[in-house]
Length: 326
Ligand code: UT7
Image (cartoon, rainbow, N blue to C red; front, side, top):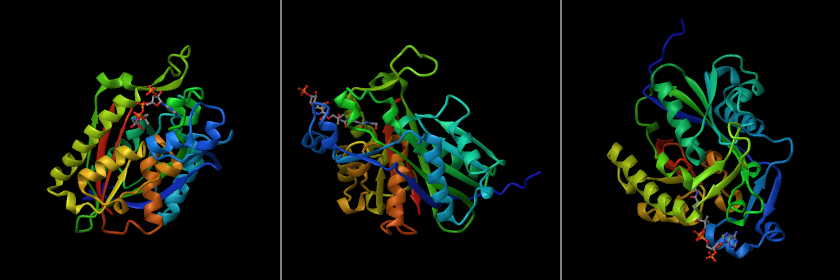
């Protein structure tokens, strides 16, 4: 029988990201839609986005982000006990994207499954992996967010199609009993299905007669995002007995610069302490937080020992936060 290792905490030890090659500017979208670079930039902060080519999928991009995260951690796929993939755009209804990624990495051990929490998916997956690690069931996990929202867009609907991009991000989590407070301090998850019709995909494998396109009441989701993310931030800090001044970095879900700035203002965090990718990636849903984290760790902004607050809100509605000492 495999020996259980009772971890004090889960440490984030590897980071990886993948963005498909094709970059589409606002101006390019404005050539065929009644929109403008000015409108998109002012309302959202987005200037461009990466979109998949015919051979990219949630599994292929997730596997590449995972390889990069493993390299960073100095681990191999053989060291991994479980793969948790947050995606709303899986390659297939089943096998799970996580299992396809396991195979792409050459893993025959361990297990994997997908987590469906839309744009909050990465926070939900991180929380799930952390619980498995702290229960002693696994030691090392890959937590991946991978999305191809370009395939669920109505490309005639200017109110939604300009907002999203494709990509994948990954972290490696490892069990640790080292003294001190490095690692995931706590996560807080919420969902409220009564608001399910504010942001949803119209159809899926179970309802093939529907369009399969993303639909959003943007203004209502915006209102929920500002309120719920603000209370999420308070909930996370209160749970750990910490204050706004303790937060070194905000790594938010990247849906709209105005939502991000609202939360940063509440925390009294200067702009240079907030990791922003929405300008170049647009909203990559469950991939946005790990992509932002990867960028800021690799360019040296986020350092070992920093207190990082991640938060997200998405279709469901789902929302949550993770407070991590890197
Ligand atoms: O990641 C999941 C969570 N998602 C979010 O957090 C998204 C939250 N919502 C938002 O970020 C914003 O609500 C949007 C960016 C989606 C929209 O911004 P807004 O300031 O709330 O604009 P609006 O929806 O109130 O639309 C304002 C106007 C409308 O025209 P009228 O009715 O005022 O004449 C829209 O038809 O802008 C129009 N509009 C556009 N105009 C040019 C909508 N989309 C576009 C467009 N280009 N692409």
